[in-house]
Length: 137
Image 1 (cartoon, rainbow, N blue to C red):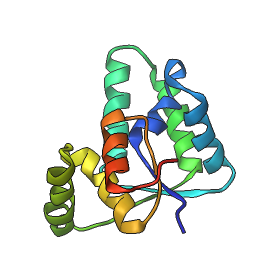
Image 2: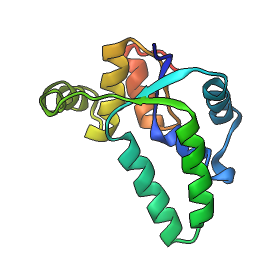
Image 3: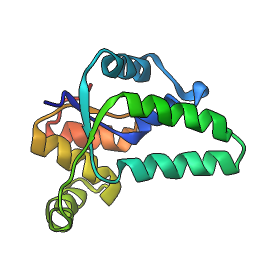
């Protein structure tokens, strides 16, 4: 059973030293300690996209990216397999209701559906989660 919904914004802080905080490190500590987390299906694409852009901008190199991906691979991160119909209904409705991007709505909808707290450093998503009654990590 999962303990929280993990937003890419938190996981990416583990790659970029200048973005790591006590909060993001505490979430990582939970995963290293054995917690299982869940993320929407777009999560791996979001992570890969940011890493690709960071490599192009020479913020990280491929070796650093490889270590980051190896770390992620050792953590218990489940990717939600909600079907496309679900995205076009529940996620879209969540985006409309809370004025979020469909990407952010995917995290919020998953937290609502699974009754799980949300780990994010995204202020807009955090505010929407609070408005929706979702607990924050």
